Image (cartoon, helix red, strand yellow):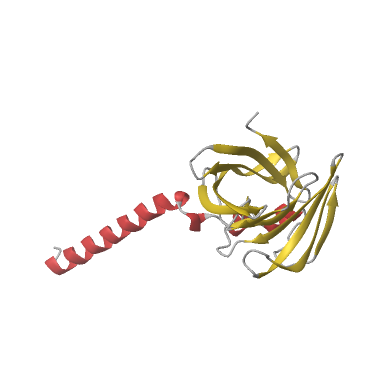
Length: 212
């Protein structure tokens, strides 16, 4: 015969077990459920093309027409902040493109802070987000308000990152990552939409303009 006291205890235990089971059932949609390996695949080493590299590690890596070097200390002319940046150069027929990248303060993305291209004014960026970092997963989307500064003007934009495949095999390289990067004006007009694929040990392997 079960006493009322035991019945209550049994009910609490069953309820607690049910709650745990319910939470466990939700685990796949929570960020904390990503394994360390899964989150590490969307990290600085993936962007740099150096397996296992962390932001702040020395890098001098050339793959094809792109080279990434750093870190170096650079003072942002708009904010006056001293930043740790990596310099990425890309050789093209028109000349060499040079961009500086740093880690966002919130750690969710790598950000551009400077861009120089042949025949164009130098651009500086504040609060940018360009490549996802840390615990991202398939379908995760995040928007950022940023600004571009050039020719003495400041223009606000909203950029968004949507990870379409957090980890897949691209041309025989497992652990590759694909995302779509979109830029819009303050009025909501889409100005850029790009699809990127990065692969371990290679860095950027696909850059597709989706506006064409």
